[in-house]
Length: 514
Image (cartoon, rainbow, N blue to C red; front, top):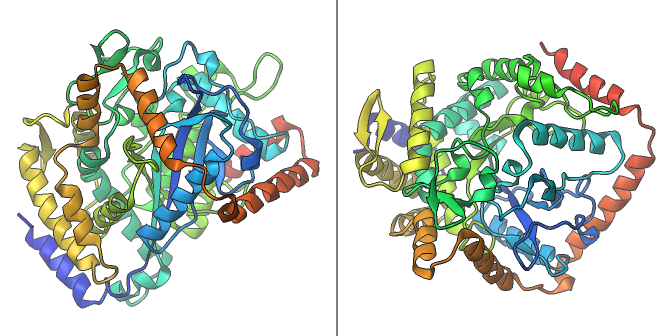
């Protein structure tokens, strides 16, 4: 049942003309491992045809040299965004040299940690700093965990979009609105796990030398019978050390204080690793709970873009929130791009609902409830009997689902004033009878395959759908790649400083904000 509070808020936004003047800007960062034709993680360097991963704005790498990251600019329509993402994939395959993308969030099979090469970014100070950060991640969490892939969905509203909501749309007003969105996204994250969760199983090597509570599936896989997203579970891309930060997103100053605390609070385990190796070369940026701001493993984060070398916390403090980065989206293995137009529009509807709904501050008790609900959904979200905590009481997900779906449908209908197609996309997605996580398990059972076999088969099928495209249509991507090589050369020829001093200087920029 739609609440009176939501009805009132939706009506108020409509009467103010909010949806008519709305302009959403959205972009995608899409990660995926390069593997060979046997499904083994690539040992090759980042393809030179793709430019420099440090300076190319279109294609970079994440933790591993083999972990490709496609980065789109922002677009004012879901269709334009999807078309650009599709073109990036086609361009990527012109440089893959017989390799393919592993089109799953959970990684391929490994023999050992050493198979994972840490990404290289050249000899400039900024490039070496990125490499040092990744060395720290390897020492803290292991390399295999860092090979989990996902989709980061970057969402913002144009400056003019806020105008109908207040007489003066200051940056403080915008910050508070974005933080309210974050709180509601976390409250309703179960919805994204249900519809985007696509990692119910993993090869046993993913948990190499790590304790876990998963069950055996066949001879070499681990799973949970009703899981939606192991990627977002305790064995996924997570850090238990960060729980102590109790980040609530009630206001920007509190958030930044928690981040600074995370970076500046030494942790014995990370202190024992040491800042430098036996040769005196940096191997961590700090010994805190977080090395840097981006080590915060959360489903959504406030962001502000800025020049290279500027600390993210400093940019947020001085300029406020520019956009939100939604990180809790699994790769859909049945879609070549990992996500399609309808799913992009569904994210827009979900995020817009998070914006226009009442969003009270989150207490420490609610933080625990949110974590409990996430744990329940990632491990048992496909169970018909699952219950989540709502307003302090266990409530059947079927009831919670019905209520949210009604509100999302009304939001989608209102958004059609802005751009048509949202209600149709929502209805289409809600009519799907089988979630991605369930479809994966159904296929594994019906085909009698291991995850390694199935993952390779499906990834090859998806790779064939990309083709290589018309090279003439990739002129911009080619120009960007070539320009990035020149930019890297110029950067490396510029005068630098000793890398130990550079790391110290980088840390001092944050310490000044304490």
